[in-house]
Length: 311
Image 1 (tube, helix red, strand yellow):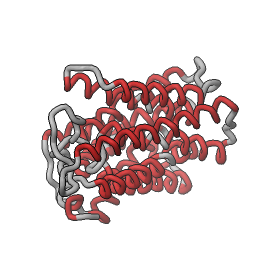
Image 2 (image 1 turned 120 degrees about the horizontal axis):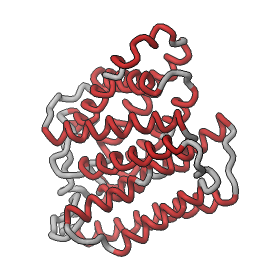
Image 3 (image 1 turned 180 degrees about the vertical axis):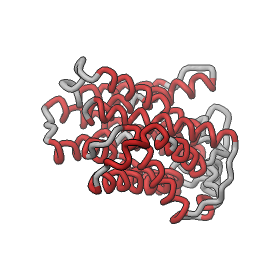
């Protein structure tokens, strides 16, 4: 990792060049790829959601401490973001246990709507029409993608997915702020979630080797490695665009579920996927145009009143 990541991972959006922002897009897509395996790992093991969350979080925490060895620099904001990450992760794992992978992921990505809400509250005015349009297109695509999956069954799982989405969007919104510390925030979230061991201690002796392997793999891939990509990417991409890129998880996660569990796709799913991809591409084009307008003679983004709140 770069020095900025090893020394706390502080987010600095002011001097991001177009080339660096492209690298940020790639890092966030790799983040989404790692995250997309959560449903597969969670549904494949027979352990409770509490134990799954605790083991995955602890293994992710140890992976980051041993491999990345970040400087442990914490702030009040880092702790708050860490708590948001913890709630987001725990509710999402519970949701994957209670409802289908498709339901869980599509409802969690209501996070995009929450990012716009948080930004509007902070600015005290409505977002641009283009932002609203992209969100409507993306959310319509998600609904189409799982049109026959959104049933009354698993309503608790669906509700937890929406709660997870609210905290997912909050983490994106706060992490993209100047001075945020994504890596320490991840460590806080993992440490708090690891306390789940206290709830399920009697279950530990009954866990099979295969289930241990699945939970450890989930922690290393979905929590540890993804946090490295996320900490690098979120430093260079605005919150709304970061959330939109990570929405590719909406397509990836059900793909793994289809291959592993036989969850099928219909014509509505195909149309929904096209809308989701289109919304991501349109948003990236809009973001690139804004970036070019805001670049000065040296190619750095100039702070300006009225620009994205994360710049």
